[in-house]
Image 1 (cartoon, rainbow, N blue to C red):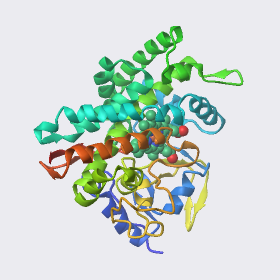
Image 2 (cartoon, helix red, strand yellow):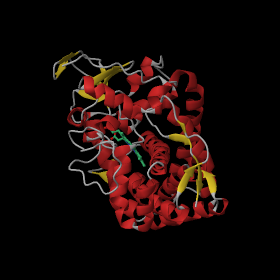
Image 3 (cartoon, protein in one colour):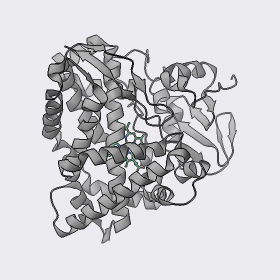
Length: 395
Ligand code: HEM
């Protein structure tokens, strides 16, 4: 086995084409080294790591590495479901899954279609748009807003808070801390107000359902509710926004599948899986070894950080024949790993899938052929990836 390649994940050139970097590294070894630790490249290793309890979520250690060991952001990281492990994590997942059900997602599909059409009505006649601000950002905001029962007047504020909060998952946490904590403060205040309102007057929304969720006399406490609502608002927007933009940027380079999707919305589900596989918005959720262990030929010390990379696993030729080919009718034997796996498998995967399945065929049908109207600006240095600006001409 050759020595692993070094990938400078902090270099903007990496963000410009992560797949090329993974491809080259895979030729050398089953993993790569990065400034943060190990990067797993093979499907079977990524699949195994996200299920291996010896590798826990990096969570607060990510903040400690940026010199943040107390304060609101540190406290929030300690409360959110993604950073809990073992029994505490199972308990939260069980309670939230009583409220956030597949039915609650399915019920929203007509709203998703109406929202997609309404947003497109706003720019269709122009023949051009910047897709992120015109569609990819406002669409998931409205959907998560409807799920939570939020008045539309709050959507713009929501989006701003969520965007600022996403900086907590990037490489500039320390520098951006004041902005992140200001957003967290506003979002938490907002959540407390809404929780109090819904306790008084419950409605047919997810916040009321979370308040009512109960198992064997156990319920979510006030702080737990606040943390859950803030993480759903955050998780429900930025990732989906980036995934829509990743999807449209991919179709921009693949006009035939775009035309096919416009003509046959019946392929929406497989097209969405291919988008998730080919250009995922999530880089994966970093793990830290909680004990000394062995990974293949490698001795790993407790405290080692590793990224089980969804984007790399999704292009592993051992699982996906011709992995760099974008094929919206692909029938893969294994599911893509864009939403992670195991106990921490993305809580919003069904919602994100439904949003993409509804939005992409409507965009394809109503916009028609796409052409670039300027350079695509990709987000830099973040675990949540995608175009920040996607200028398009269409029709
Ligand atoms: C395409 C969009 C999305 C992507 C790419 C994505 C990706 C991910 C990934 C990679 C994880 C970590 C899995 C692991 O640790 O193995 C995760 C966890 C999570 N996601 Fe998503 N996500 C998306 C949409 C959403 C949505 C719409 C919501 C909420 C409405 C959401 C809420 C969460 C939560 C709460 C967790 C933590 C789950 C836990 O630790 O138990 N995500 N997501």
